[in-house]
Image (cartoon, rainbow, N blue to C red; front, side, top):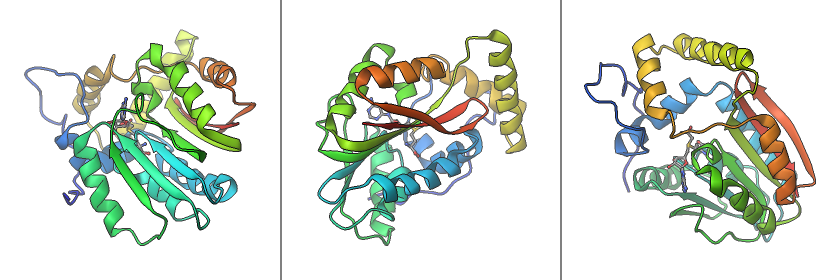
Length: 245
Ligand code: GEK
């Protein structure tokens, strides 16, 4: 198991000769906790809300699943609040993330069993679950695969089970898109990222992270079989939805 280096993200700090598309490789995994905390307004609160969801929705004899688990932050947020008899499954297709996540889970004090699997969430067989987290992951899944994935999650959830879906948003109104994009960059600047870092990261992530509108998410969740869909957190162009089966 590889111990995660709790590094500060400076991956885009120096001018890059060639700009490669963003990948969840070892360099990103090493600084991921810092990167996501300083890039996603409300990220810490989404983790706190997953703990609230675990208390409300996790049922003994079922699983809580964390799809696109990265360093298992959402898994661990749930793990500390599930009742006895719940097991957790975290899935990520980045080997670098899973290696570091295993080390973090090994150091964690909670008791509920955790399995971390290096796999594509589009292929993995989902266990019978009472709570699922897609915390900033659907945005990396090809558009054509998103509806099928949500239907599979809905089918795996017990009646009354819930999905927490957190995403970066796009807006139909160009002025709203521009304003919230600008404010998001303002947030990143306030978190200590330079203008060069913000610009180089934006170029790297373009076409890798593909955001959609809130209306699209709501509609697709209903079509997948969720009977209640509600926004329970939003900060700028980042939203978290609670969808109940
Ligand atoms: C958190 N949820 O800290 N199969 C498996 N994993 C995938 C796939 C896929 N098809 N596509 C992307 N990933 C975490 C944060 S990060 C969000 C999630 C971000 C994985 C990818 O390897 C990465 O680890 C994660 O999804 C997205 O609560 O970086 O903005």
